[in-house]
Image (cartoon, rainbow, N blue to C red; front, side, top):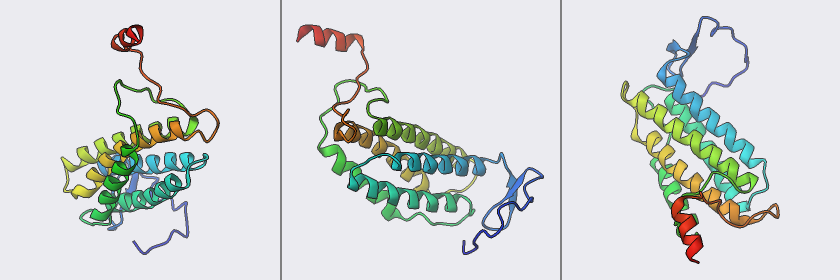
Amino acid sequence: MGNRLSQIATRTGDDGTTGLSDGSRVPKDHLRMQAMGDVDELNSNLGVLLAEPLPDDIRELLVTIQHELFNLGGELSWPGGALLKDAAVLRLDQALEHYNHALPRLKEFILPAGTRSAALAHVCRTVARRAERAVVTLAAQEAINAAPRQYLNRLSDLLFVLARVLNRANLDGKGGDDVYWHSERLKRLDAED
């Protein structure tokens, strides 16, 4: 993992394969590459979210998560290797408890909407779930450490909670509350009030 990229266009992938950290080559559509690509897409979407106005504590947390996702991707590119530490999963658990504690209890499903930053957090959440599914699929075929799967599972939960927090942050003057799904039950409750 100590190598630095000095040449981007190597042309070694022109045959439809790509190199892993251990020097082996796999097809670009290999399950390992799918998982790595989904993690990379998640990290890129977090970069878009970080381009938005955010509370400082959430910004700091998301930057840490980006670094940890880079470790997770590195671990996926290194068959048998381990880069993601258990402390990273614990950090997500702690953040999840911290941010969820101040939120009102959900009575209905919410839509992935609201402020721009909340909507982007929901996009990140769905990409995290896809990345988690890709890691689970890979783990059914090859030995994978538990930490990447656990991390992505916790991260998607945390991103859901952060979307709710961001809807209330009112950084763009449009914050307020979650956007609720209008179910028949909700309509009845609204009519009773």
